[in-house]
Length: 265
Ligand code: DGL
Image 1 (tube, rainbow, N blue to C red):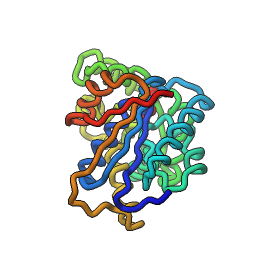
Image 2: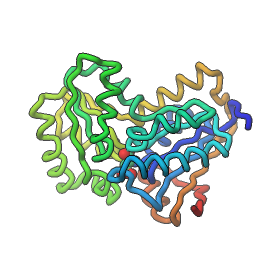
Image 3: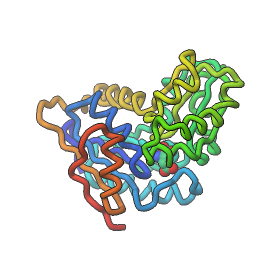
């Protein structure tokens, strides 16, 4: 197996959500080839056990390594929360995960709110990661299980979503947070609504954008950045029939989605 600057970046997620990271990568690094894996047959991961998620994550990482990727990006916060060490142990190429990227971006905060799926929040992974960069900060976490289905339903600016957000964020606002980490792939799509709910004084940390910055830095440091100018190739692998992935995915990606392949496991 050999990788070089032309090799693709491998990005993976439990389903559609990681496309927010792909979008940020496409914007930040327009010459990079990308291979994406979304486990659409088994999503959602955010309510599953650590053992199950670890097993699925290992399978996906191995699949992408066989595609000779030069870098693995764990785009799913839930997988990053409970299984990033497993990926790092088995991978022959560098591994980046959204939790570390989000934690680095949150380090300026003093009272930091973190929102994510129940599994991500229960793992405490964000609090641990943020404390590494900002040991004096206070972290307040809140699981927001309903946000994933609301985003997939396209209710990005819907009254139901607004009321749900107000309810979830009430305890964090009571702690007068100055920073809110969007600790789930789906939440960047709720950014306009969430910033209205928390107000302008709260800094929203989008881990997809933070990840694109980390990838750019790592590729430059390792001299692995694709110099272009060839048209990059984007391939998407999913485990269920691609129709839903394609329709909803275009909203996440902000452009049309082609080269979607179904993997039968
Ligand atoms: N991708 C997941 C995350 O970022 C959200 C969807 C799921 O629960 O699988 O946590």
